[in-house]
Image (cartoon, rainbow, N blue to C red; front, side, top):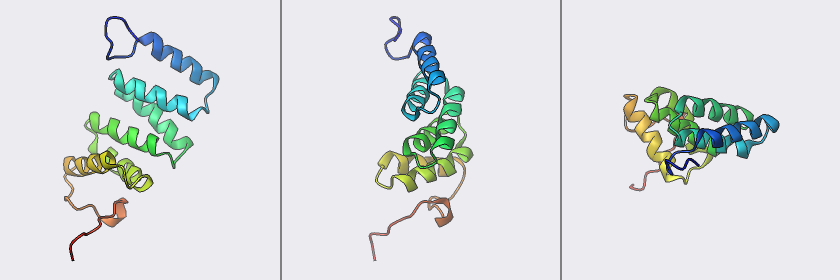
Length: 128
């Protein structure tokens, strides 16, 4: 980490992660760490690329879908985030933040508050 900013990863740290990933391109944990680090450094477009690569490598990865959807929302790309966050909710139905971000994506994209069943979100009614 940079000595001048403890909250943002240094370019040297990011370069090190990229070098390690170049040596082991199928290392999913490392790719996700790089994507998260790029997000923390506010390098959102680069983070999207890494999250997309992780999602392509493992379509069942909650971390990849959730990270990609969250990052797309940070880029104000709600329409792109909707299907990705729907996938994240399908992959981990108990993850509260995934549900919240999915609802935010729906709202920002101008969709109704109640997601349709074909969007991958299941609403459970608790009242009869």
